[in-house]
Image 1 (tube, one colour):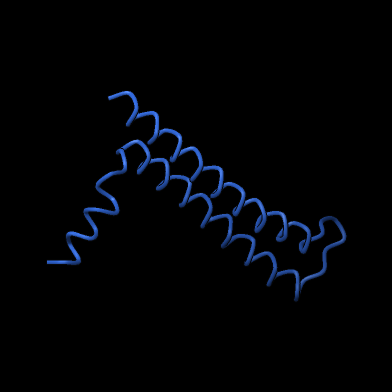
Image 2 (tube, one colour):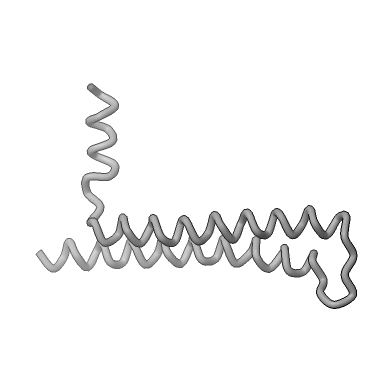
Length: 86
């Protein structure tokens, strides 16, 4: 019972638009993170003269973090604007 009340307190105050943004941005971030890890392991065993796989994997890993932080900031701003509107 206590766990259900805690979950309501944590997620009950977030607007539905912010939840959707967090879900979409989180999914994109996780996919980019997994692709970055895949390209990193691929770069350990495969050498390409056309593309540097280590640089590609590093870019994907960094950008997945940046996208998640930006999506979190957007969700917080939208949630704040939704609460001040009412």
